[in-house]
Structure formats: C-alpha cells, structure tokens
Image 1 (spheres, one colour):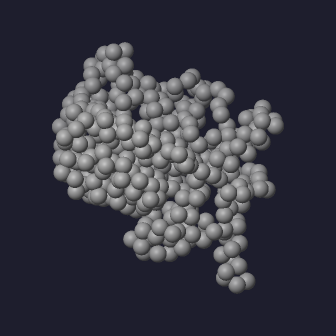
Image 2: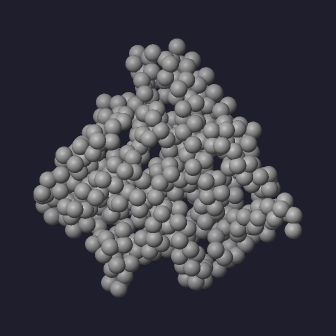
Image 3: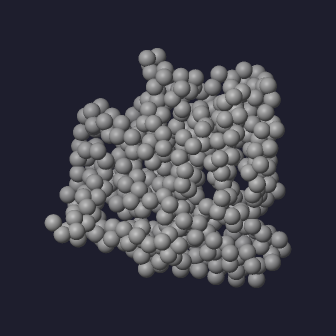
Amino acid sequence: MPSNHIAMNNRRSFFKQMIGVGAFGSFSMFSETLAAEELIETIDHLKSLPIEDAIQNEDFWKKIQQAYAVSKSYLNLNNGGVSPQPTIVLEAQRKYLEQINEMPSLYLGRIFPRNRFILREKLAKLGGCLPQEIALMQNTTEGMNTVMLGMNWKAGDEVIVSKQDYSTVKVGWEQLEKRYQIKIIWVNLPAPIENDEAILEIYLSKITKKTKFINLTQVINWTGQIIPVGVIAKICRKAREKGIFTLVDGAHSLAHIDFKISDLECDAYATSLHKWLCAPIGTGMLYVRQDKIASVWSMYPSDLLQESMIEKFEHKGTISLAREEATHTAIQFHQHIGIKLKEARLRYLKNYWAEELEGYQNVRFYTSFKDRYAGGIALFGTTDRAISSVSLELERKYRIHHTRTNLEGIEGIRISPNIYTSLADLDRFLEGVTTLLK
C-alpha cells in the first residue's frame, strides 16, 4: 500500500478513536465544524519542523485554533483559570451524556468502571506514574484537600506553606490550624525567583523536628513562576529522609510543561484537567505514591479492604459521568500535539506580548523571562498608576478577560493565553493595554 494511503488510514484511525471518546463504543458522526483530516495534517506538519520554526508558523496554528469554539465578543486571556475545550471534546461530552441517559444505572454499574480503569492508565502514561496511583477528582482543590484532611494530625505538628500557594489551599491549612492546633510555617518567595539554591534554602531552612508536611506549588498560580522539577525533587528527598510528607499543587503544570510526576519524588500531587489539558470543566486527578496510600484517610469512608487502594479516594456516590468519559478525548487531542511543541508554543505566546510590554518604563514584571522559571503565564504591574483601573478598562472597554492579583504586596494583571490564542488576539491585547498605559 502506498505510504500516503497508510498515513491517511492512520489519521482516520486516530480520529475514529477520538470520535469514539474512550475505551468502548463509537459515534458515527464527527462535528461538521472541524476538518479532521486537515487538522491532523497540520499537527503532523508542525511536528516535522524544527521546534523554533513550528511555534512561529501562524498559518498552521490558525488551523489548530479553529478546533476550538470560543467567544467572538470576548478575548479570553485567563486560560490559567479554566480553558475552553476543543470542539471534539465538547461533542464527546454531549454524546456521552445522551448515551448514559439512555440507561444510566447500567452505565454507572457496568460500563463506567471499565472506562475509568482505562482512563487511569491514560493519565498515568501522561503523568509518568502507575495507574494504581491515580484517583479521579473534580479539580486540584479537591485533590489537595483529600490529602490535607486525610492526615493524622496532632497539636504542634508543623506544616511548611508558601504565601504564594493557591488561596483555597491556604484557607484549608488555616482551617486545619484552628481545628487541630497545628502550626503553619510560612515561606515567602520573591517574584520572580531565578536561583535553584535560593529556593531550596527558603524551604529547607524551615524544617524542624516538628515538621510533618511540606506543601509545594510547581507552577505558581499568581505569577507563573516555575519551581524546577529538580528543586522539588531535592526538597522531597530531604523530606522523605526525615519522615515528612510532601504534597505538590500541580494545577498549572500538567499538559503545560514537560515533566513526569515520578521525577518530582513527592508523596502526592494534585492537578486540574480543565486547565491546560482542556478537558471538560470539573475534572481533575490526584496522585498518591503507592506506598503512601494507606497512610492517608479517604475523604468519604471506604471499605477497609481498600485501605491501600487508590480507589478509596473516589468514593463519593453518584457523579457526573460524561465529563470523565470525554476526558479520554482531551488526552488524545493533547498527546497528538505533544507536550514539547505545546509548551514551546505557550512560552512563545507569553514572550510575544511580555517582551513588548517589558520596554515600557512604567511596567514591572513579576515573572521570569528565563525558560527554566516560566512557561505560558506572566504577571505585570504598573509603577505610575493603579493597576486596578487598567484592569477595569481592559475588561469593560476592550472586552479582554484576564485576572488581577493582589498578593503579598504584589498587584498586577495576569495574562495566560492557550494554544488557540492567535498573535492577532495578543496584538488586540497589546493595543488596548499600551493605550491605557500611555
């Protein structure tokens, strides 16, 4: 068979899997708004180019952008909050909802458990860990709190937490402090921080004989600061030597930067799938190192026979099935693009707008321009006016959706594009913000 026919069959096979959305069953129709063959050819072409050429090929990225159905009236530059799904993922969720509704009890009791087992395998491959270490969650917050609330706390236990950790996570620790009389040991990270040894010193210097737990954030929500994998691994190794549990907030790292969970050497890791993986809203996952599962209580009571099984963390009664099922499709879409190309494109988009603004004397960045310490998210502030007024006008006058941060003396606008964001979109943002800055 000619090679072009083989390639065509491979593309068709790939999209049949995507249309099938998951392990079982398939749908006969594909969304009319998506040119499947053309999209796959586009991705294949980009992956055949040197990465520096691929990330700047706007004609081809335009075709990938067309795979997303996004607002025409608003420009979404807050993908770090929640990202829209590719059309094919959205269609998968709709189709699954219809299929499940036809016989919900049968689906919940027979089909879904098999599909969830396969989804764990796919997520484990994506994250670089074992399927029996993956539990399905609704978001990062649920995953983090599952571990935090599942520990055996006693008065006087110390927990190392950063003031730059996510707000709901910090609230969780503050509640535990009141409830169990544990002690939070706060660390404060400069923005940006571009020195591995300095990061290590900030955390390791806080360890005492009473330290029971270290909370780490791999990509800081507010600033986009990356704590390098090697740094986290060193902290986790030192913690393990002293019997200290480590939990990593990975809300902004999975499907954004190239790494494996196992390389972090942490005891637990939580992430959202509706951010950079572009899975349905309300999907997430929790990793717990296999030898640590038994030491963490499940959020809801589970069978004692499951004490050492990851499934105990998923006991929540009836849940929304269609979102999880459509996650199969989101994984396939992401994997076909590939994390190396995706990370490079996200960083290119960030640098495109940030390097333009960096030249303004009244702009200050709280995000690194070094690849090791930043990906696709950046935070900037102004030195001569209230950033709140700039933010308000961006939203009201220019209809550019973003998020504003006010944390530990740092106030700024966070911009987080995604792969469906075009340079024309960023030009629109730059036109608006530079007009306001002048």
